[in-house]
Length: 244
Length: 233
View 1 (cartoon, rainbow over the protein chains, first blue to last red):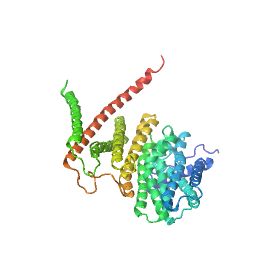
View 2: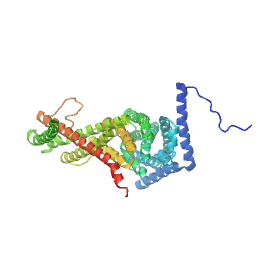
View 3: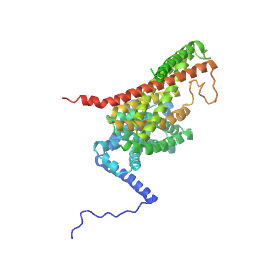
């Protein structure tokens, strides 16, 4: 007896709420895993992010010279430069998430296969993990090369974590917009700058606080608020951007 | 000529007269504000109304974008686009007049005062909106993506107006009209001209906006015909 060509699919009963939530999580997880799998095959974004960050770091370090910045101006200058490096790397690597889907024409399959909000979460999670991994490499290097004394390491971690998360969430939504337009690579920084500016200013402020101490809780709260706002805006706007 | 079209003509002449009176009033009727160098306070009657009008225009563009995402009516997309285009002109003029005034009062065209920072970001945001409009060919996708971007602008705006000014603790910008002390601190004749001028500029905006929307509608109707004519015989 030969095996049937089409395996019978078990008929599912109407899914209760908890299993719908589980299916949604599984979908988001599947998008996240898929993105990492394709990334690890080519390592394109990984290399772009890393090389962009290292190149900018070397440029900054060389330009400032062996003496670096005068200690009186260190607090003002160095945190800003750190976030410029992170922004450069993010702008170079993060839009790829959706641009790649459109270029290889897999976006249409993804549109058919997944719930928009789950796709957004999976993609944002992927971008966030990529960016946080980069920061984990970059930040210690930067602190060492620039001889930056850190007064409050926990605050630096908070700045990097919340800043990276917000950058990833906002970039995911913007990348979804940019991927459907012409001139994607040039368009992303243009669209992203005004949206990301509050995040960057808050992150620089928080990093300054980590270096010098004495920053109010307000900055941390506002940064977390920005992340939450972007997450909500992303979840609401992404289905409209994604589905024609 | 019907009564309606006579009225339609008349209100434009009335607007012309209204704004003319505002200009004359700004120079001859309103007194000079205290602590301002020379005649520099007179720019208030043009700078502030233009800033307010651009603010109204961008809010209107956001509302039309939300309506578009909800109803998917191409007219709402055109209305949002026209509001951004004309709002950008007003915003640019407000920035330019602000810089002129800053040169006289503060000695520098530009010094990243919080108001200057937020208005420059607003300029960049809506310029980016227009760049995005130019970068999407498909009309439906263009309307959808631009509307989403405009709504994103409304979401980010509170951070510029409420969070960033707190980080930069001082501003040199006069705040006599809109301030935290919850009362108007302008001489009454100045306030009359300022409010009249603001009304004039806002009506001017909605008139220009109506014309622009009609133009965009005509252009959209004509576009397919032009393509058909270009087919070689």
